[in-house]
Length: 94
Length: 418
Image 1 (cartoon, each protein chain N blue to C red):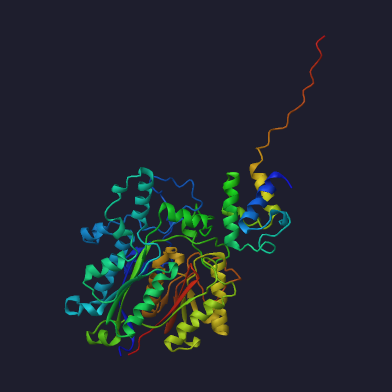
Image 2 (image 1 turned 120 degrees about the vertical axis):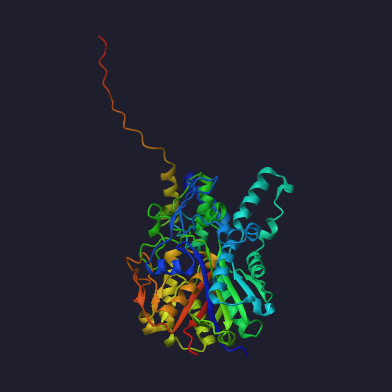
């Protein structure tokens, strides 16, 4: 479990008042963890605060499992991709 | 016993018009009053996910109201005063000839005095100078300021109170006004719904609830689209609606023009969730049935429903489901529309403004369009929802209103036959 997932699981554990060790990345927020739509909104509010980001409404749709939330946060936090460095062969100085 | 209760006056101030004539013309045109929010001075709109609302632009209270009245109350109560003034003038009541103890005022308001409220709270926390809180803060913020000032403006000394049940507030006010007259406690009740809370904190609160439309920020007039497949949340609105209710005997004695009859009312709680309706629609179905029972009519008599329909994904579908449960094979033969498609969700004013649209449908035989109904959602498609005007002889209608706090109301309004 990476650092981001751990933080999300910890936030879930705190919200649900249950041991984070019982929460798995594959768990469905609604079906397995019993969060209704309001609870999901409250959880994501906490995630926004934890990771200092804003989740637009249109991104909410796919965030149905612990791992989906984790992947989303990772993608949002990833630095912007740098252009690939092109290896330049240098001629040996005679 | 007072017998039947009728509507003799209407007044409205809304994002699609100030005054019933302007409002109704715009409603029949299917015009949306939703626009881009210019900004919350000093807040820019950048940090808000939704950027549209049904605002009443350029409202100058001094054009309509005595300046002393206008200055003592917040925007929502100014709206209430404007609507009540029009409704009373429309009713033709000569208040000087009436027993003031028999004239009541019942207001429905969800948020109340938030414009001044937010300003004073912000300034106090910033400056920490309690003695600079305005002396008028408490009278303005108290939720019955509108019912108080309307009574003062018209000398109404009868039953006077404010009902606050979020989005169903003024449907309850309308129903309670009917009951007040039915029980013989008043001859006339001015019932008003009012709210004006498109303010930095309240708007932010609804954004954080993820309840508002955000997909149409660049096309505001398309944002409020109840029952449409591409709806994505409600649009905040502001305004007020007022109806003058009287006992039929009182109205006939003074030869008043009668618009319609308020015949039945139901108030229930789902006891389920603060913001989510029960998805099976059963609770809403019960509320509609109770209102019809109170009116002494069968479901087969209803030919129009002014739906609560806020343009949220879940809410509209649940309401459509409930309508199918109650009306079964007739469900597709009932005219249904959503006034919120035009004015947005005016919260505490929604019941009253929807009630006015219902009364006018009965009175004129025209059911206003549901704006932006372009791609019917199969989950809530009812054949009676149209994006055009429906010419319909409406004999009996249902007005639905469902509020946060698991609160439901339904009112039956009928054509009055002497």
